[in-house]
Length: 156
View 1: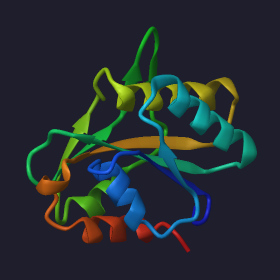
View 2: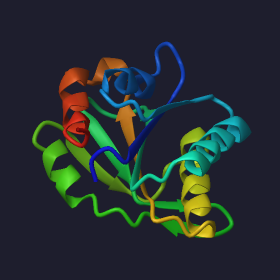
View 3: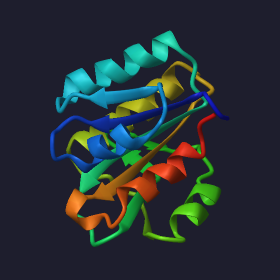
């Protein structure tokens, strides 16, 4: 799976998902605009240009200290479920973080990009899997470098 992973996070000077993305050593990163339509367009354009095996998307949420929320299902008019087996990732993360498995990514930008990403993958019959992980605000992450190192293991 190495080298065919796209990491995404939302822009913003104090956005923890952007700061985490800054620490990941991949050339395949996408800094999403904080816009419902523009962020979806950015992701779709990226997927049209390159085949990825996995998309790992990050967003920030008001979570407890060192808590990460792995989102598994996205809903709008219909429901999309991730096809990514996140078991190994969960095991690595839970060594230093509290992990919550969620079926509700909320109603804002995170839900929108995850829903539309999963929808695009299915409608275009891509062999791409996608997972969305909510991370806490930057002050509630003890060690963002350690967190980024976990994701750097996925890259050559």
